[in-house]
Each structure stands twice: as C-alpha cells, then as structure tokens.
Length: 71
Image 1 (tube, one colour):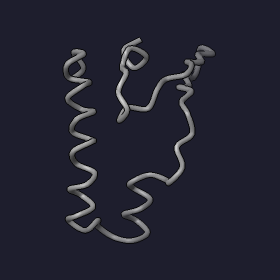
Image 2: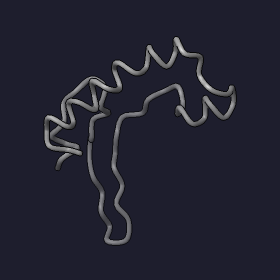
Image 3: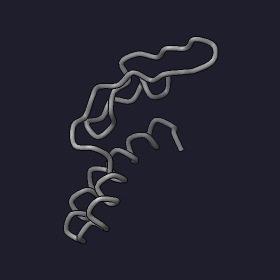
C-alpha cells in the first residue's frame, strides 16, 4: 500500500502485488539498463561526475518518500 501510494518520477511504480501465501511478488515495470551493482561490478566505481548526476534525482525521490512518512 505504501509503495503504491508513491507517485514520483524517480520511484518505480508498483503495478501489482501477488501473494500466494509462501512468496510475495512485487510487479513493477521493466527498466532497461541494469542495476547500479552490476555497473560497478563490471566497470568499477562511478566517476564523481556520474555520482553527482545520479545523486540529485535519487535524493529527490528519497525526500518524496520521506514526505509520505516512509523512513
């Protein structure tokens, strides 16, 4: 419910939640590009300019979640 209530361009939308009793699956849109973990594993740490470019939108999304009461 909390994730579904978030509406921010930096937060991936929750499309559906499937609960079969043993597992819970969050259904979200596919985002191309891979994970930050995969990027760092393959190419090493990000250069400072890439970190700066990612930091503002990520921190904005985090602030939006905090405004909704998510810690």
